[in-house]
Image 1 (cartoon, rainbow, N blue to C red):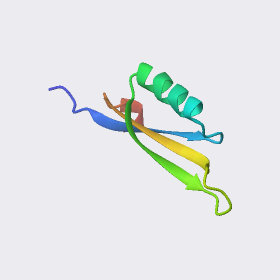
Image 2 (image 1 turned 135 degrees about the vertical axis):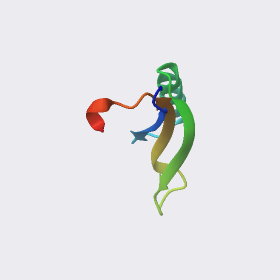
Image 3 (image 1 turned 90 degrees about the vertical axis):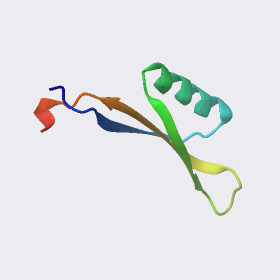
Image 4 (image 1 turned 180 degrees about the vertical axis):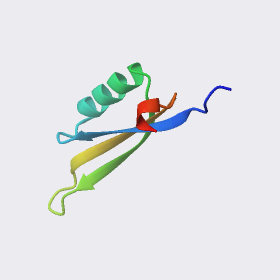
Length: 68
């Protein structure tokens, strides 16, 4: 019987938050087989622009027997 797939998560931190850096990160990791799952912004009180962004990705893969 084949083992069930496990969900693996990837978090990418951006310290420079622009449309270009977000787009580049989304394109890079989806090209590597990850699916976009969400984005969270860390805000500064003194600015309306985010100080950081955390982009979340997910994919299903075979369990690694070494991690069991």
